Image (cartoon, rainbow, N blue to C red; front, side, top):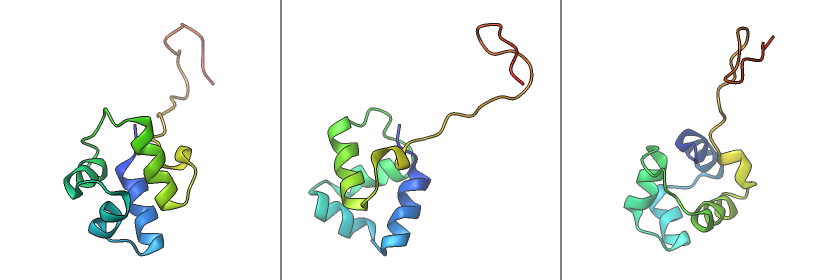
Length: 81
């Protein structure tokens, strides 16, 4: 899933407004708004790649990063240091 805060940060770096980016991508501004608010969990790979292309970054830089737990055990019962 995309991280809306990462998308917003990249837009800020490039000086892009949402309406400008949506027009350039040929998508509805409400679609971009959903992405920015993290309300678009079913985004297609094609749309995510298009967004990354317009933001001039690899797609991986726009993805949510899973939280890693330290200490204890993971779901497999393996101790994590």
